[in-house]
Image 1 (cartoon, helix red, strand yellow):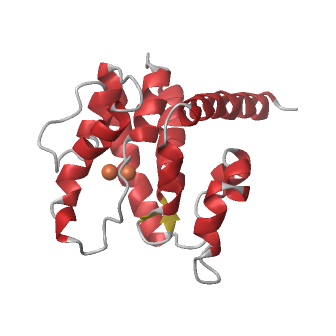
Image 2 (cartoon, rainbow, N blue to C red):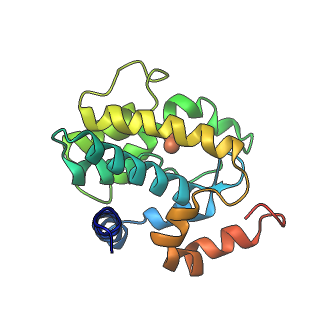
Amino acid sequence: MRKSRRQQLYRIDRFREYYKELFSHSGLGQIAKFTQHGTTSRLLHSVAVAYYSYRLALFTRLQFHLDDLVRGALLHDYFLYDAEDGDPAHKGHWTRHPSIAAENAGSEVQLTRIEEDIIRKHMFPLTLQPPRYREGVVVSMIDKACSVYEFFKRREPYGQIRREVLREELEGSLKAFYLKLPAGES
Ligand SMILES: [Fe+2]
Ligand SMILES: [Fe+2]
C-alpha cells in the first residue's frame, strides 16, 4: 500500500474515533433527521465540516488542538428544528442558532473554551465577533465551503465520507433520512 494511502486511512480512523466517542456521549445523532441546505442531512453536513476542517488543519502542519477542532465542528449545528419551516419561533435563525447549538452541546458534554468558541462564532461575520482561536477560523471557513458545495451538489454529496466514515450510520440513523428523499437525490 502506498504511503499516502496508508496515511489517509490512518487519518480517517483517527477521525472516526473522535466522532464515535462524541456520539456515544451525546444526543448529537438526533440531527440525522434534519435537512441542511436542500438535500443534505445535518449529520452528514456536520461530519463533513469536521472532517475537512481536520484535513485542512493537518495539511497546514501548524499546531492545532485537533480533538477540540473536531468536536467543536461536529457540534457547531447542534439544533433540533427545521431552519426553513417558516415557524416564527425560528426567526433570526442565522444569527441565533450558534448560541442554541452551544447551549444544547453544553448541556450534554463538557465543552472546552475552544469548542465553545468554535460553535458560537462559526457564523462569523453574521455573528459579529470573529473566532478567537485558529481552530474556529478553520471551521468557519470550511462550514461556508461545505454550505456552497451542498447547495450545488444535490445528488449524493460527500461520497468519500459516506463510504469511509458513515458506513454504519447509512444503515442506521441516516437511512431513514435518505430513504424519504425523492429518487435521484439520495
Ligand atoms: Fe451553522
Ligand atoms: Fe454548518
